Amino acid sequence: MKKLLTLTAALGILAIGFYFYFINVGRIRPNENETFVISSEIPPAFNGVRIVHISDLLIRNEASLALLENVVAAINELDPDLVAFTGNLFLPEGLMFEEQVIELLSGIEANLSQLAVFGYHDVISASHQERTNDVLAAAGFLVLNNESIEIFNQAPQGIQVMGVAPTLTRDSLFAFLDGHVREDRFNLLLMSVPTFSAVSVEQPVHLQLSGHCLGERDTADLRQPCAQFYNGIYQFADALTVNVSAGAARFTTTFGMTQRPSIDSFLLIRE
Image 1 (tube, rainbow, N blue to C red):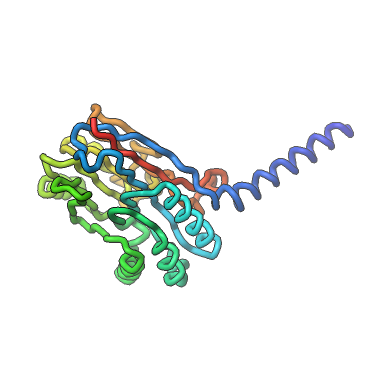
Image 2 (cartoon, rainbow, N blue to C red; image 1 turned 60 degrees about the vertical axis):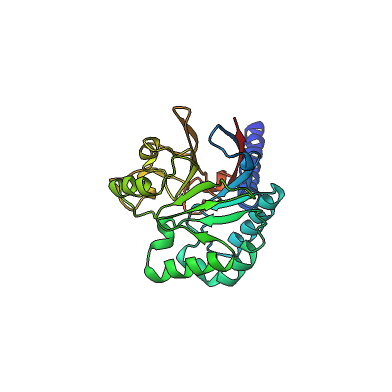
């Protein structure tokens, strides 16, 4: 009986220890994942360029700010050329920290560009979207809201980067890609959710970066669940690489405390 009580106490101590680790350490120290993207479509000037992908910061309190500070430090340690943020910056209660978030995000040191798209949490209202856009812009991010831009690296041939709104329908995405994909460029697509990844396969999109997916619970339109492409890397026909971010903050999920925040790094290698 005494041994049983000792074992029970030990298991209880371990459980409490794991709880405090994931609350106070796991959420604060981001996990870094690296992927090589190898393609003959990568321009010579972009051989060796590093893209860092972050998503779903979901700022809501001071603990979120501590996480963001560590995320920015981890990004800069990777010496990124391009930083891509795929949406969901604030929860409604986190908008009171706008100035602090601007200061922290302004510390990102990207050699070429910092780009972003909106997530569903960013467009819950017109005022929330406007304030989120203002924060990202003040921090040096260009928000691509159904827009595209060519990024250059001291050479005439760049890469095409496209960003789409979370409310875009399947048919609208087809039309958007028809008008923005460049046949003669390496094409990078930024989306807040990976719902329509299969659409990208039908276009010469080479790399798609998407935000965290919780399946049907994480999309505003249940007819468009992203559960088909959950979290991680998906490869399509040796042409399209899709990354679904695990997210930098998971405060709203049941098991969020047991999963570390994540940032993803992509090294472009010309084949």
